[in-house]
Image 1 (cartoon, rainbow, N blue to C red):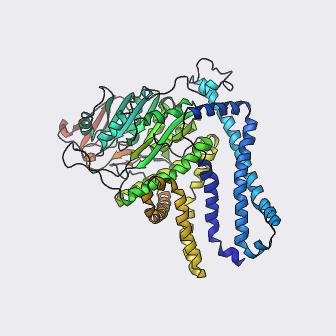
Image 2 (image 1 turned 30 degrees about the vertical axis):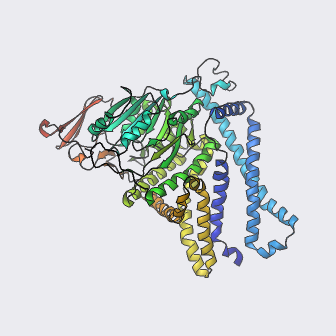
Image 3 (image 1 turned 180 degrees about the horizontal axis):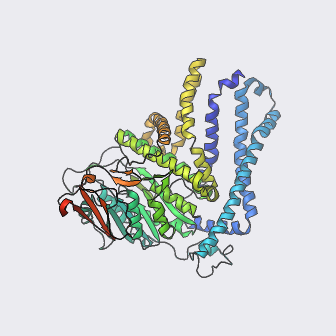
Length: 595
């Protein structure tokens, strides 16, 4: 028993790594970017789902069971050795095999087999229901495909007209454009979308016009839409209303697409009619400094420590995305930095109303727009995909100042808690459409508490027992295990390996941040925007709020309405707006904080 207690602190770590290896690392190995071959495999799998579902259940259940059973076999041997090394060595080889089979392989096999069979059964039922619903909505009506033959006709899964970049409208919400905004827009133009809508906050509209006038592009490709309502959600909604193409791509203003084929690769999964949202690979780009002279090029610099930590976060996150994409075509979130959707899946009045008025426990939610969009398409039965390949990479910036960076972490963590709770326990559709993704989301709820457990227990436990081997072993394991998770990142940037100890500290910091974010989950202020929720209304703060009231909850469809105070008012009339001042004195000479 003394031997068991000596290794007790490792049990949680071992259990967590069993989950990581069996449910994340191994499935991620089966991920591949979407190509024409993937589409053909999907069509064959679709036919198998409809005609030979029993075979697919048995095959996937057996494969999953074998992998899990082998892991259980190894862990059973390891546990027996840790519990009583002397007794373990006294066993014969046959006895060791029998013991490991009973304790490890058989339970692991049947648990994984049952889980895989349940997932496939749910997948088959949901797929049939979804395909029929598409026909009813006249989405799948074309030659050779009708309601009677929908389960048998492979063409029903494949788009009759292949998507091209000319089928895409890009919507870019802009609030205080970064120094690299011109270069960012040039990267979008080079990919040849049908249209680019820049939804400019009225505080910076004039500056956006000046920048766009310097871009080299076809006349009419870029259109600037002024948005008087505060908040990113209002800007996305406004841009979506103007979209006329089959696909809509939302892009943050600090993102640069790294290839002229980026958009072409990004939209390939949409040729499968069940795919409703697609994301891309992202890497960190050091945020540029503003040029000293007006209109000059941005000043580039080396990445700072916090930016490198943000790049590590992206690399670790892709393991989860690769796993969920490979298993059930799900995702916890298609990142808002660049996310592409079927326009028909989100361009409806019900979406705009829900998107602009999302609440949790009666509190109006401000951020988390990308998580809402992801849940919305999943709840409708669509699948998601992530194109994690070299030709579908974008660069993005992160806050390098400690206070701002911490504010970003808190906001992202709050968004994660709120969205995961809504998806798992309120909407609950993800359990039906993407059960594997739902399980990983559920498991992620406990991650910060397990990290906190290890951080507190193991140092204290080693001091109480005066056994420093436990502490040294724990430190060594932390470095080895984190290295494994970042091995693909170090392959791309070998020099970053020196920051591994800092990354371990950063991970524990994130654990405390996530726990704090859970406690303060209902706070909705946006850390790097002058906007927050007051009395369940999205309200401007800061300099512009002193001239123009930020509490504007007006949709473009509303007839003439006014919101304001004695200092200033924004008058919204149809799709137009006008800024007025006390005594009808115009504010044309004041350009806001971005001038």
